[in-house]
Length: 196
Ligand code: GTP
Ligand code: MG
Image (cartoon, rainbow, N blue to C red; front, side, top):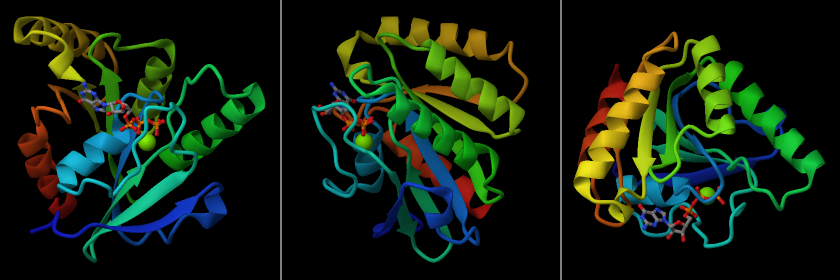
C-alpha cells in the first residue's frame, strides 16, 4: 500500500534545500487557499499531515512528504495571494518555476483550481510551465461541494476543452476534501504514477 503512513520530510525555501532527487515526486500546486493541503490530507487520510488554514498563504515553503521509500508528495506554496508583498510573490514564482522545470524526478503535477473560478491568469502560467516542461498534469477542480453536480460536470468539460488546446497531457477531475469526491480516484492515480 503506497499511501500508508506518509511522513513530513522537510520544508525548503530554496532549491539547494530540496531533498536528493532520487525518488519519484508528485507535486500539488494551485492558488493560495484553493485547498492543496486539505487535498493532501484527504488523499493520505491524515487529518493534520499538511497544515491547512483559513488564512491564505499558510504554506510558505515547499513541503516534502515521504510516502514509503519510493515516493514523495510535494506541497507547493500557493500563488496569487494579493496581500503578499510583490518581492515575496516574485521569489515564490521563481522557486516554483525552478522546482517544476528543474526536477528530473518530478513525475506528475497535480494542479488544483477552485471550481468556482478555474483557469485564472496564474493557473494558465502553471499550465504553460507544465506544457513547456513536458510534465503530465492532473487538474483537480476543488471545493466541488460548493456547486450542484450538473454545474460541476459542465465546468469540468469546459476546462477539459480549454486544456485540449495546449500541448501536453492534461486530465481534469472534480474534487472535494469535504465530501471526499474524487479522493478514491486520486489514491488509485497516485499508486499508478508512483509505480509507473
Ligand atoms: P495555502 O497553503 O495558503 O496556499 O492554502 P491551501 O491551498 O493549502 O488551502 P487549505 O487546504 O489550507 O484550505 C484553505 C481553506 O479552504 C480552508 O478553510 C479549508 O477548510 C477550505 N477547503 C479546502 N478544501 C475544501 C473543499 O474541498 N471544500 C470546501 N468547502 N472547503 C475546502
Ligand atoms: Mg497549504
